[in-house]
Length: 233
Image 1 (cartoon, rainbow, N blue to C red):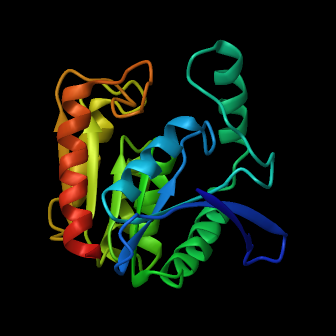
Image 2 (image 1 turned 90 degrees about the vertical axis):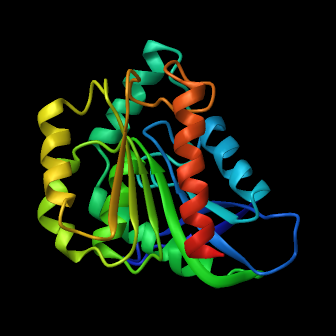
Image 3 (image 1 turned 30 degrees about the vertical axis):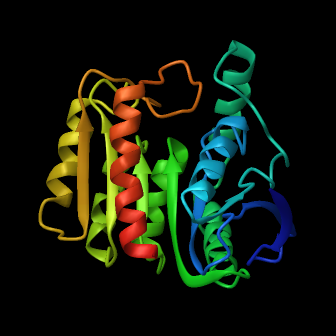
């Protein structure tokens, strides 16, 4: 893993992005890995490392840099949850998408990249991955248990590249009526696929997380890997 600095499009400063490269030196597609509310933490780094092991270039930007650079929290304590929620509530999602677009453009130009790049995001990052599907030219976008997706349904007509959404049946942050609205909004868009995982909670694929479910995570990650390989090479 190595760290680079990227300049924000709005001129507000620069932010860190962390890169994991595959051992295979052949040209590879890049995946922008979008953080949860816990920052670019150990769980997200493990996910990025796994993507590199699958042959992709993984790059994870520090999206909380405007509030506090270098956030690395877990879901294991009340204090960490409190701080994570404060960071999320203070986070400007539109600025986050701007930073992700900068990261996506950088990813396509990284040494060894074949010019193709997509996103994969979790929780808050799952919402941002959908926003990248509606607002960027990413080649593919993957969203795990994104929050507040019903509010993005009016933007679904903008989606022109594959979007894969993983939804937890028992997600406490995504009630049944929200899921129904999202699925209804996606029904007529050929670029959108959604999978619902029964009897699992939010963050079922978070590495070493409180609600980690090995079966659901393995199935979801398999769908993701298949789509990323198809679209990014």
